[in-house]
Image 1 (cartoon, rainbow over the protein chains, first blue to last red):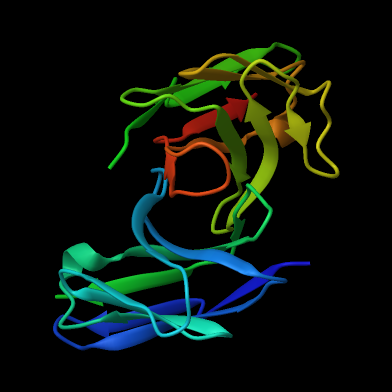
Image 2 (image 1 turned 45 degrees about the vertical axis):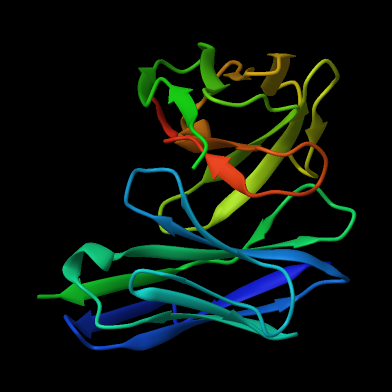
Length: 110
Length: 117
């Protein structure tokens, strides 16, 4: 059974304080690993898809990396508007659905 | 990114009534849509996979007679919560994949907050 575990559950940072969020996964065969951002009361917003170990993608202050067992979402010099819950999900080969982790609630204090 | 729209965003109903939530793909055709449920401070739990022109596939433990899903066109899927009870109160979110088959990113609607009194 595919599983996704995210850590930490919650993270508070000062504005400008860089850090990383972790997503550990087990999957029979990885088709893709996805990162989403979710604001309170809203649907998830797509950020990145990673397909193979060693792949990296960047968007503004965010950078996602992938190994065979985990993915990291690095946030550099965050701003208060980066506060949100960040969700990680995996899709296994042959499956249509995504399996989501519990998310990391990120709070950036000004 | 692709746009998925849900309606209504909030609905309050009395216990025993039925509520319909619509999910539309605005700028692409979606042969498959997914319905998720999310409890406060918890992650998304897949309820069912909605396939255009055929019956939905429900996840284990989800009552298909309670949560009726219809995917009548390539741009519209509906979720009807029948005979709603307070325990059905939740945040329901739909999503759709831009590309056919198993590839491509999932894009999500804005979600629908259901409160059953």
